[in-house]
Each structure stands twice: as structure tokens, then as C-alpha cells.
Length: 240
Image (cartoon, rainbow, N blue to C red; front, side):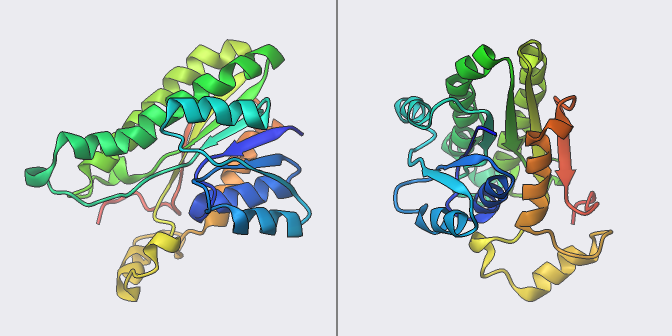
């Protein structure tokens, strides 16, 4: 089927996406910082899939270029990597706070897309899937820098879809709601219960919900889907 590069795949949503794509037959290049990929690589192998270790800092131009050269032509790019997500009120917000988010949600996706683009154009096909968020719509206080970065990523998705459609390349974004992963291990149970109370489907989301949406967008079934921002949050559309 070809190579799927998943960034930030050492844990959390990225790990789930990488495992499912491998199960669907893709050779998955598992990207993260060195030392964070061994568990995912082992699990993919144990589950009968094929995985490649692809360590790199995907906010560094030279490392992104070398990464794509190393894993070979990329058929599916999943830009999932993220950094710290601090809650910062306006009075304490700095330009550096904004830049920290833009590094992952504008700079990194741009570098990655530029690196995989020549190969995708040459083959006349390709899939780019961004992992966004429903936070810009929820508009929670203290999340302005994170929300601005994710909103910018959605704009890139729509523009690039129009630019690249002529080359057979689709560009879409998956916007998860709150999906508890390792970073949320200390979240109080009552906070999760309060969130679920506002979810029409009556449950918390899981990494598998996001992975299956990404797998659809990477598949031939989504060949005529581009420029879309698919929210996966169980219908949780109102801020709390």
C-alpha cells in the first residue's frame, strides 16, 4: 500500500493512528523524538504490521528533510506531533507562547508537506491528514494560543487542498474533542464526568475513534474528500 508517516507517534493519538494504519496494510514510519518509539514499534510488529523507526524533531527543517529522505516516498502524511499545551490567560500571554504553538501547528506541517510534496506530485497521488482540535470552536478561556494555532492549521488545510488537488493530493483535518491519553492521567474523575454529560453520544472519545477517521481519509474510500475539517467529538459542540 505504501508508506504512511505519522508524526508524534510514540504515544497518545499518534500511537493509535500508527497501529491502525499498520493493521490496514501500510508500512508506517513511526516518528517521535529518540527513545519514545520502541513500544509502538514493538506492538506494531507483534500485531503483524510493518513499522520503521523515524526519529526526528519535526519542527527542525534539516531534520524533516532528512527524515523524509530516510523513509522513502511518503504516500500518507499524518501531521500529529504536538508540544506542551499550557493554559495561559490573556494578561500573561506572550508572543513566545503563541510561537510555541505555531511551531507545531504551522511550521511543522509546512515543513512536512514541503518535504513529501515532490514524491506525491511525481506519483500523482497522496494524502495529507492534519490532526487539529475542536478547541477553536469551544473558545475556552486560557486556551487562546493553542486555539489560534489549531485554527491556523485548519486554514492551511483548506488552502492546500485547493492548491494540491490538481496533483491528485487530498488534504484534510481531523479535529478531535477531548480524548484522554497519557498526558491526561491526572484528570479528576468528576471533570471527565462533567465533560461526558455534555456529549450527546454519552461517552468519552478514544484514540481508536480518531485513528479510524484518519484511516478512512487515507483510504481509497476518501479519494473524493478534500479540504474538509472532520470534527470527532461525539457531538460535543457547546463550550463548557
